[in-house]
Image 1 (cartoon, rainbow, N blue to C red):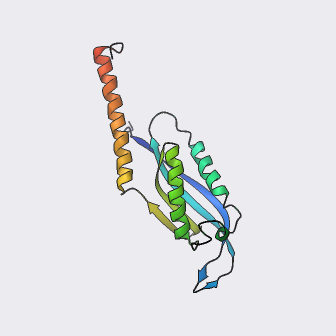
Image 2: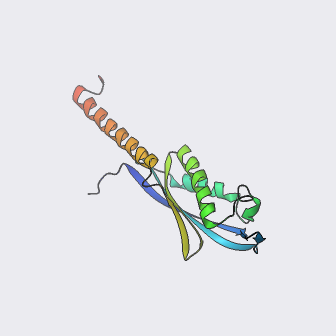
Length: 158
């Protein structure tokens, strides 16, 4: 029998066809395309059915403004060099906000501009992630206690 978890973890992939250029030593490089891959690992509380399609749609909608664009023309990348690290760091912060609004928590995001190189931002060792897990544990324990007490004293009295 499988052990009950306090949360479910999902990995969602999204692809962006995006162009960029890098400025090195004051000289602008050639604009060139990539199919950027972003892998979002997220958790949600284990409470019934999780419609992860809604999370996929949320991520796709957020990324849409970058699809088939030159990222250097979109803030903040009009001022920040759009390396895979800078883009992934920015998407990390923005997607964390969106996922939290829908009851999810971002565990990590990996950005790749080629199949052989990737950059990962992980939140597993951060206090906020531990707090999120702790809160879910407390909710789960509270639910079990309420159920047991309700059975002992009679659900009508509880």
